[in-house]
Length: 354
Image (cartoon, rainbow, N blue to C red; front, side, top):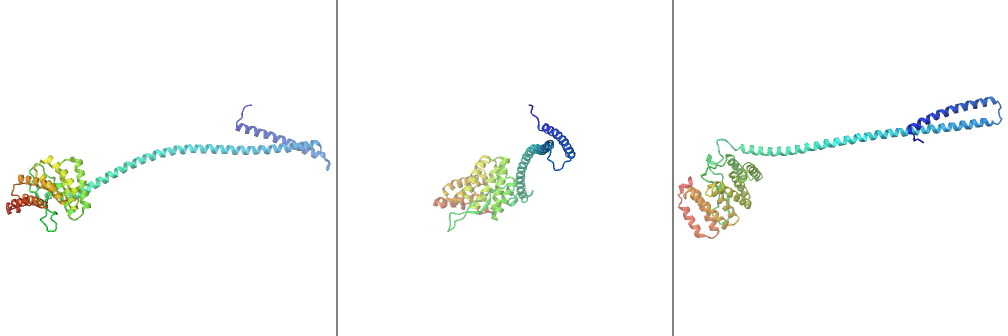
């Protein structure tokens, strides 16, 4: 027997029910005729009447069952249609979800790119603020150094304090002088001289939280643009060392000055005034840490350079002799202290007004 589909079964069921309805109507009509034609009240029913009544009852029962089957079939068909609708909706939602995931990934990528742009812009803003801060102190007719001497050196020579009865080891962080000249084709850029003055101003006000980042930012910019061993980098290292010195970070300052010394010796030569200034600064820092033995040869070399470049009767030579005398005194080398004092005494007083 061939399998029938649900729709075919229901079609045959409806056809069968129509036949049953027709048959029921015929039996009812026949039964009414028999009941009306008999005319005997109170007499027992004939077997034919009873048989017809039984047939009619069974047909009506079959029709009731058929109607129930039709209702169930309609419900099943409705449920199946709903199932198909939900299945199609689920498929559509899956496709929509995949599309939304792609859109989300795209938006997240754009967001990450925008975050990078924001970081870059913030860095650029910081740099521009830094440049603007420096430009406020920079002018075309002023070099940023005392006396408008555009050729003067940026370094301030760190001098040892005069002997104090309470503390003979202390070296001054405030007594500073400018070296007289640079005998080279290398000139410190005006912007760095201006930055030096700006940093000294902040450090003098105790605003190290401004001075140190300012130096570090400038140092990073110089390293990116000129390379780590450029003379400008050495100048910036020296400026940062001065700030560390004022903070009492002598070890960090000495490390920066050693690095600056290597760069300056390489590019400016071993007998350059900038090399002498760096050597003197190192000697002072070693002295502040009580390392007088290590400081002495540095101070002597700075003295030799200054005597060679500036002449033996120059004020800076006298101050270098004073530093050397104090270092020797702290080591108990009183004979050498006497020699330094003799040389110092032979420098004319008029030289100190230069």
